[in-house]
Length: 132
Figure 1 (cartoon, rainbow, N blue to C red):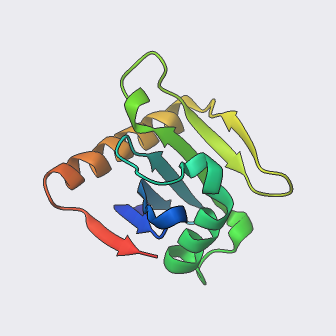
Figure 2: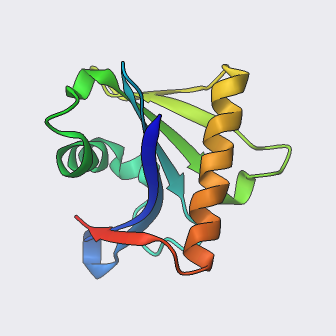
């Protein structure tokens, strides 16, 4: 699987930027996108802006290789990593937006590892920033 980790900065509401971690993993059959709600996000939460955020990430990073319906989206809160509350939610953007806990333990572990890598890369100055 190819992919990468990035920190995305977007123009937010009221002049406050939205800052979130982003992990993109691509396979032969689909793409996975993990949004990491950052503790230091000064803007609107990922949860409250997930539809336009997902569309912009798809347009900037995955189009035209992937149709929007072949991309799976997930959300994770940074402060929950490594705690009893650690949980990744999968997000359905078909119809009304819905979230549900990710039950696939192997995929959960892979996404948590990728999230930790993304956050570690940012702290060491190795992240690639992309303003959408």
